[in-house]
Amino acid sequence: MTRTRFHQGLDDLKQKLLTMGGLAEQAVERSVRAYQSRDTAICEAVLRDEAHINAAEREVDELSIDLLAMQQPMAVDLRFIVACIKINSDIERVGDQAVNIAERVLDMVSHPKSDLNVDIPRMASLAINMVRDALNSFLTADAELARSVLERDDLVDNINREIFEAADFAMTHGVETHRDALDTLIVARNLERVADHATNIAEDVIFWVRGADVRHHAQT
Amino acid sequence: MTRTRFHQGLDDLKQKLLTMGGLAEQAVERSVRAYQSRDTAICEAVLRDEAHINAAEREVDELSIDLLAMQQPMAVDLRFIVACIKINSDIERVGDQAVNIAERVLDMVSHPKSDLNVDIPRMASLAINMVRDALNSFLTADAELARSVLERDDLVDNINREIFEAADFAMTHGVETHRDALDTLIVARNLERVADHATNIAEDVIFWVRGADVRHHAQT
Image 1 (cartoon, helix red, strand yellow):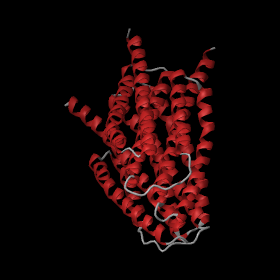
Image 2 (cartoon, helix red, strand yellow):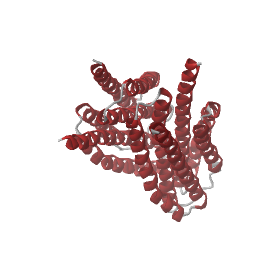
Image 3 (cartoon, helix red, strand yellow):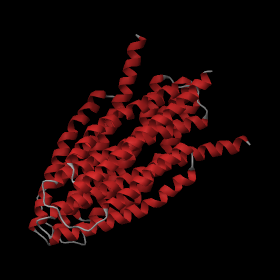
């Protein structure tokens, strides 16, 4: 019976993390939408909703501790809970990046727009998909999917470097619109960090699933 | 006897984290020294030493799991171990910021130096002191010291904003040296993130010590 309550707690923990992950993913999507449309109302919404993500982070930590205290967890459950604690902090930081992007957009609206030709939406879509797949790999304990997330990190890094150089070039060739190019460069760096956090989450999933696998093999 | 081994393990965990914290702190110091002297050999050393910090991170996670598995920890020990897991990831990311700074310096040496008048060493010293005090508050379970770290975060944020504006201005007024100003702006952002991680560590110390205090009062 206690065991059942414990397992119910693990399910709750997973569900809470996934809900929080959804909020963070949505925050990044909205901040990028705000970037495209220069919509300050969306920016304000992103800034406002950060508190929900932060509150969820504290809840997840507390629930993790409650579960660790509830009974002597088995090794596989222990690794799962530790992975949750680590994933929790990465999800919260994905939300921070959305806030950083929203703040840049708020800066951009008071400066002339550049005609900088960089594909922020594509980069954003890659980074957001990495977060989504990292969370899916967590939901389904899929180390292969987690590994595919790790492989995509270099692609996002490369796009970030391209945007850095393009924005740098634009800044020297359009003094009027240089601030817009600078803000875009920073938005790209923030998206690169979103991808980094997705990578961290994927690594934590592998850490958990691998530990579980090792244990599984030991039992057979 | 087992209890003693467990407590020895907690001490080892703390010691490992502090050693790792020292490495990360040193990495930031060196990267800033490289920034000041434009010394690529120091940059290479920072890039090379990142592997040590990453290896230490994995060790700390594994030791934490071993301790959680060793026996049913009491609530205060549980909060301590969870705080260690969280602090671990922040320390590793302080090391990442040192790498980011070193990479910027490697970029700077191939571009003309600007006469940008911003005080990166002062900002670095504030951020590094925040890391040091956060680690000291962890060593001594000093929530007051941890709180003083939180209070300093705004100061570093303000300096970051000042440097952003100064570098932005310099970029529009010196096309030749704009890249140097841009790299400096990013170095400042990296230092701001070092301060953020120090803040996170301080929050984790408070989370741990407060939990311990609550428990302490409950016992009396």
